[in-house]
Length: 152
Image (cartoon, rainbow, N blue to C red):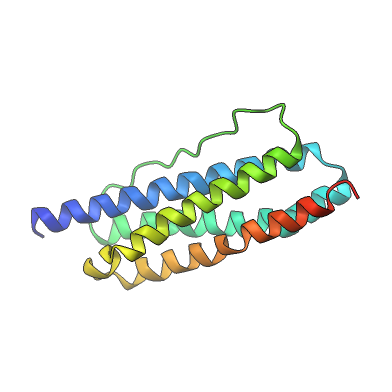
């Protein structure tokens, strides 16, 4: 493999890792909100937000690791950022989770638009990125719906 191809694959791997870490941060924010809610609201949060974000995080991690393994690259350990505002209200945590998930989706969208995943010739990577983005695509709308009904 040429140096340039290896460098491009490493850059792609790092972008996927950063997006996965952002998704992990969104998941941590949803979990923090869950802990502050009453049982009924917590159950709705789990159904509406936790599941798609958790699914996106798991798929992003598998995509990252699989790509690294297929191309002989070292997958760095993912370290999602933890919420820094532990005393925040559930509404703020959910809003922040949706924002962070949107940032991750933007990163993956830019990566796909760059055509780099096509250039490296990895169909599994392209499929993984599409699945992660599909899971993240519902987060903002679901967060908005959840927040409209919060406290009612």
